[in-house]
Image 1 (tube, helix red, strand yellow):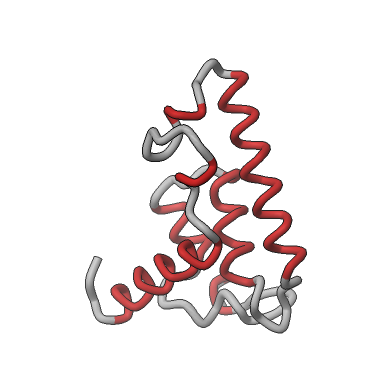
Image 2 (cartoon, rainbow, N blue to C red):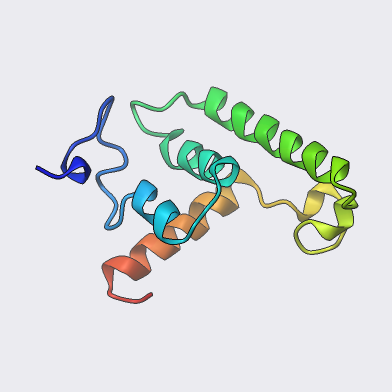
Length: 110
């Protein structure tokens, strides 16, 4: 049995054509970004934590912004260079993009 055939603590990731962990590994997504994606995928599932997951996402984005600022990057160099938090996608926008990508994988597009 493959580790991808089971999930501890729910089944919310197994429903995807490609499990998030495999996606992160193949695409070399760093942990701090992967954590946000995992939370947005599970927040509205029965095993998710709802608003708490969304609050954690917002906090993680704040942490990333602070760490980037410490590296000497201005906020405007993150994302689309507008330099405000408005350039950050909403949780709903992230979920929509993920669902679109998942649907594309289901239809055989990459």
